[in-house]
Amino acid sequence: GPKVLQIPSHQIIDMGQMVTLNCDPVSNHLYFYWYKQILGQQMEFLVNFYNGKVMEKSKLFKDQFSVERPDGSYFTLKIQPTALEDSAVYFCASSLGLGGRSYEQYFGPGTRLTVL
Amino acid sequence: DAKTTQPDSMESTEGETVHLPCSHATISGNEYIYWYRQVPLQGPEYVTHGLQQNTTNSMAFLAIASDRKSSTLILPHVSLRDAAVYHCTPRTGGNNKLTFGQGTVLSVIP
Image (cartoon, rainbow over all chains, first blue to last red; front, top):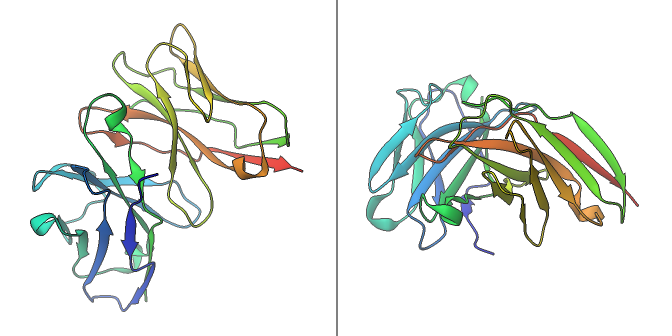
């Protein structure tokens, strides 16, 4: 089936540094999402994005977070500066639309972010 | 957001039919129920979804109670590959946000 790719699979950085997580969504999808999962905890919604704009964000989406998808390239999540509590697995997802079966979200394998 | 309740874990033997329950008593009239499953080191995988009517696809049968306060995901003839964490999640609002709980860990014994 359709695949969502995430690059890198694992990133280790020092606290205070900037990090960019990259997502290559399904090619004809229009809606993009980021979720965060801390080890041993449930996955939580961060943000969704359509037509160049954030549609909805959760309280976990701090001011240090930003998302963009310039010119149809990677959908990115940038954290600047990072904090220890940002250590988690970040999952990207995409969906074709918002109607019927097109609501289905396809998830990538995740990027494990470790902040030291 | 509608709150869901699922058993922490269930166990089955290969070839059996498994019934995974989910309670969603506070679900609103226009919220769909989605089921995803997740195995370690991978993102969630879509299983099925429904609103009011029972639905079926190649992976599972979804039975939704007539009052919509609960649903049951039925997996026929489970195999070892069906071992995963199964999440019952309401699709919230027009922005397609998924709300995950802890899910049910399904173990499948050979």
